[in-house]
Image (tube, rainbow, N blue to C red; front, side):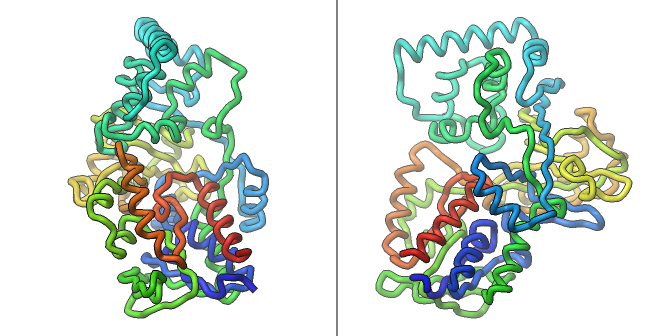
Length: 443
């Protein structure tokens, strides 16, 4: 029998349900509390009519064979391998992602490309002769790619995504995730062939034919089949601590108890419940996302998996077209788009009327020459208040303080992007949850 005889999991997203499934298989009595009426968290299906969407585009790609085995065993024949094509629309021109040499040179123009290469070489020389510690995102990028490319791409897109100045974003973010925005690395990779491709350059990814939410839905079903409970529509309202242990959790008008508690809810919310220092919590936050979904009277907009829009004048920062991930996801005889509008809870984009926001997005698509306004047959939106943990300069000290405060609770464990305040891809989230569950049953 496992050391964790009973487990209460706060949050029914990928991390929470994966952990619950592993624990339930080991004979642990499991209860999952999920705030929404559906499971999946950020990786859930959004349906309207006969169309299906992601809450933002998701992909499952892993370099670890055991994680692919895990996913295949979980959803079986529903798993499909999908070709990936991503581009960036910048200055009215499309850039392949990763770029090809001709596309890179003629896309930027010879003069601008020469300036980019010159500044890149100068930055490399400066770094070799006089290395400096990088404090901010700006420091890190300029030191490695030069200011020209920073000004053209990195600065506008990054500030659009995070709603912060690049000098206020930690260099640690660049160190960990720069390939997620690596137009420049793609340029150098294109002119310096033979380098090993990182994860972000994978030409295919794995995706369920029934939508990304199938993963969480299958996990929830299996947890129930193993005797566990998955309670939806249950917001965690209070956590009672007695003698440095969680005694009970209140949510949805009921109280729940367990020997072990696993939290995947935003660390900032949990920290406030436990009375963590306000100054430390104030330096930790989450960037929100509002997804605008358009039903279009056309068969296809582009054949891209993702399109990126760095320019500040464009309301949305990224789009995906579900039919390009799997044709059955699109409404019959039509196509659809998910447009990601980066925002903060309570700001003007978060509060904007749904019809007004959709109309503004449609106007931008029209201006870009991608979709005519009259081709929009329907629109709606969804909210994701805790989409991305924000890495401000100095956040690491605040995070350490909050984790130390929460860590005094000996039967509490944190996992997941929101719960552990880590930016992780789907495969990393699932792997972390599996590892935590195995540690708990083997301890």
